[in-house]
Structures are given as C-alpha cells and as structure tokens.
Image (cartoon, rainbow, N blue to C red; front, side):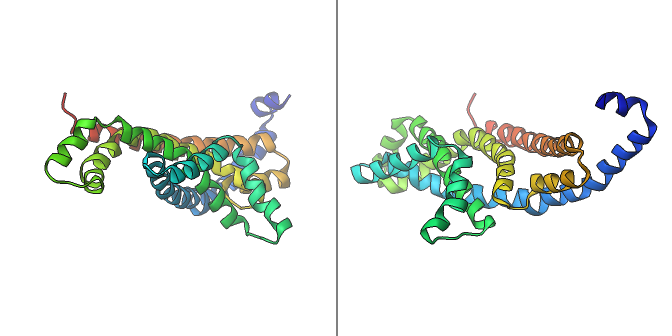
Length: 233
C-alpha cells in the first residue's frame, strides 16, 4: 500500500517530496553542526586515550598492564548504549549529573579509547624486533626508539583499521539521540514525530549517513594509496 501510493498517487508523491525537501536541510545541518564535530572530538580524545592504554598494555609494569586490561575488558564487554545510559541516566542517582553533550563525549571517547588501543597495540607489535635492536645499537633509548622509529611505522599499519573505526563512529553517534543529544538522527526523530512519515524520514537520514561514509571511504583509500608509496615492494 505504501509503495503503491508512492508510484501511483500524484498527491502523495508531492507530499512525500515536500517532506524530503523540507527535512533535508535540517538533517544536513544536524550532520555538519553536531554529528561530525562530535565524531571528531570523541575520536581525537579516544585516540590519545588509546595510545596511552596501548603503551600501558606493553609496559613492564604489572600494575599498568592490569589497569589497562580491566578498562579494555569492561568497555569491550559491554554495549555502547548501556555505557551511555550509565553515564547520563545512572550517574545522577549518585549525585553526578552530566549534560547530554558531555555525556556523549565521555561515552564515545571511552569506547574509542578501548577499541583503538587494541589496534595501536597490534600495530606496535607488528613492527619487527630488529627495528628496536637497530635503534638501540645506535644509542637510542626505548622512548627514543618508540617515538622516532617504531611509532611512525606503526602509524602506517594502523591507518586502515583506525579509519574504519572513525567511519563506524560516524554511525554510532546516532546513539547519542537516546540521551537527548540533538544530532542528525535526533533531528530525524523530531521531524518524523511531526509528520508521522517515519520510514521516509529515517530512510533519508540513512542516505545522508551513507553519503558521508562513502566520502570518508574515498578519502581513506587515497590516504592508504599515498602511504603505500613509501612501502618497499
């Protein structure tokens, strides 16, 4: 019935087109003013947290290893939606109230930090031990070898999975709507609640997410091709 109206009823076609046109700009604004900035902020914070967590996992100090392992285990072992609910809805019961924006930043950053730490740790471990030995042979300390030799190579290795993680985060930010943060999907929910065309509006929002991810995938491919130029064949 729904599809039949779209293809056969001119009045319904005009109505649907009006809804698509009128909702397009608010959805795009939501994407560029809220979704993408939230993604950039949380990915940046999460990346810093991931680097420190990965280095803690690789350190010789058992205490640091244990702290990092517990953090990664908790975050990776629980759903992101539950984590957001604990921060936004749960913490007020113990006197800690955080607004939707900061709740989203904390939740997504902690999640990215845990998952990306495993990517970075694996990238560091993928560098041959000979690189460490060669660095030590010319008088570098462990920190100097890590900073000057190992991390630059590990960065190239980690770019593809980190890029995938970033693209995934773009889509995961839609969960922020559940804690009342007004990003693109929250705008779609509000628009659909006014015109009751949930399928139409949500499909339009999905298409915008898709276009953004296609653009990011294109950039990812270009970056990877550029990095491959510096790899010996």
